[in-house]
Length: 234
Ligand code: DHB
Ligand code: MG
Image 1: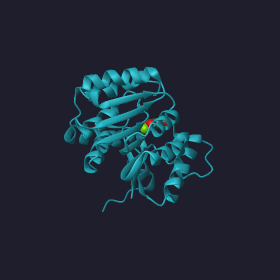
Image 2 (image 1 turned 120 degrees about the vertical axis):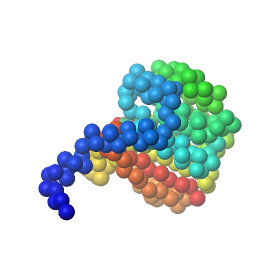
Image 3 (image 1 turned 135 degrees about the vertical axis):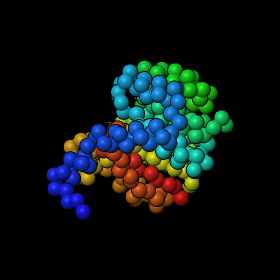
Image 4 (image 1 turned 90 degrees about the vertical axis):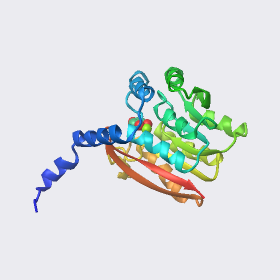
């Protein structure tokens, strides 16, 4: 058996080139990322947060979660160029609906163009403004409960977004939170990064909630080292 030096192991498994190659292999082999999705991904560079959209494999994972859970109504916190929104909109089908919350009007305009190009604009509602306020309005307006909620906006507000998500779902709903690993920083309780603290606080809120079963999956790939929390409300 070949023995690798510890330093060689570190090099081997921290190579983002390798991670990218594997993402590319599976994306090209398994996924149906069409021109509209590719255009939406490319449009991400024109938003206020270039390259922050989920990786193709993760977009497909969100679509599968929505399909497996039979989701018809999806709520997304954080639209950017609408890349993950399109995956989710395709999952819910023609009769389904995705509501997506975006702070920046210029990002929302880019996203809406991408929704039209992808043929899913009629099933997506984009609400512009601070997501806490937009979600509060949905709650006060008595919005029909959502089946799947994807939280992928500003990380310090994760606890507020979860609290809103709990008011907008019933048992059976799925809640997914993006970017919970952050190059491993999540494990540092003393981190001064408000995004890390936002992730840790929402993790503790989920753990303390009697109706939420949850786990976290670390991911590596073209987006580096990060991960997702997946929760199910029972
Ligand atoms: C950040 C946010 C995201 O949603 C993402 O996918 C990557 C990074 C961030 O806040 O740094
Ligand atoms: Mg994200």
